[in-house]
Image 1 (cartoon, rainbow over the protein chains, first blue to last red):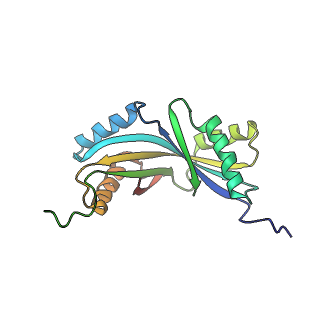
Image 2 (cartoon, each protein chain N blue to C red):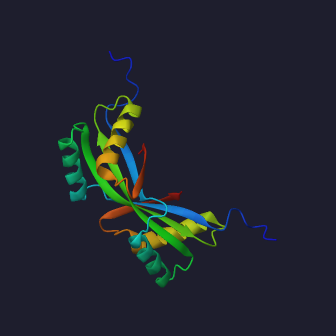
Image 3 (tube, chains in turn brown, cyan):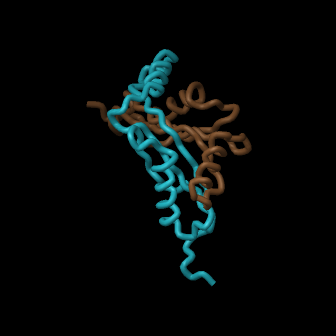
Length: 90
Length: 90
């Protein structure tokens, strides 16, 4: 019996990585231009980022698992010079 | 006076694009391997997708604006053969 167990052992944690405000996003700008050419004139701007779904084991403490994934995101998934990230559940 | 106006005129709508279940994701697999080599042994798998923040004008009807962005996502942001997308508010 493990009374401290609060949730399931496997969790999917989402990391959203976006270019920081003020950092140019040429891909997003190109997509915004394409949208307008395709008839979506209401598009003001597009920012493109990345989304990761990270499945982790030993996640009976979800807050701790999210802390670990935040550490991972800072080291491997996002470039902290130009990108910021947000961690949340799936 | 525009009594039908429900929200602000400019809205940011988020499009999350992920590889469909069953479609291989070599980038995600490579990242999962790198995580484990970096000491994050609890990582079972990583799926990598894209996240778009689309800012649109004339969005006094948010549901309608989201429908337009869904149309846009199907045409331009996602490849419907291998990817699926979800639309939501920022």
